[in-house]
Length: 232
Image (cartoon, rainbow, N blue to C red):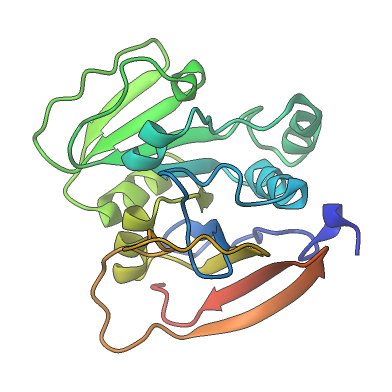
């Protein structure tokens, strides 16, 4: 299968008008031994195919969501490349997805590539946030559920979360995740107390997943799961 069509299309579904909240998918890459970060960053774990899948998911999303730790660790942004903009416009989306950051500590870099396009920062505490800019808006909320609700009120229908593991845990714990995309790179990393796909969270037993698709490309595994216990 060509890497451009991993998991088929669309990746994020059309939603019924009566749905009460945005559709939320989590996309992560790990090593075979479960490491979601090496040296504090996920850069270098996945292949070119994994990066292309990430861009394809972003191209269908209204919002790309990140935790503050991921933003501090990587010089990333929430943007899609120019060649995917016509696809977004044809689907009735904005040229670029909104970038949204969730932070409890308020500790974010004063300058970062993330802030070069529309960015909403959600603060789940009373900590100060020093980020300012013409395209940055700071909103205070009490929980990740309020983050998703606020994005929904602002018109978001499909949200893509790219971690980190602490934000993932909060979203899964709140029953807000509909799908999980996982790329397993054919690598081992080792190390003590590794950062995994989910860090923290409190579940009653395990959270069941249903496998929707599985593809292998050059030893790398691409898995797509539905989350059985997601909230309506």
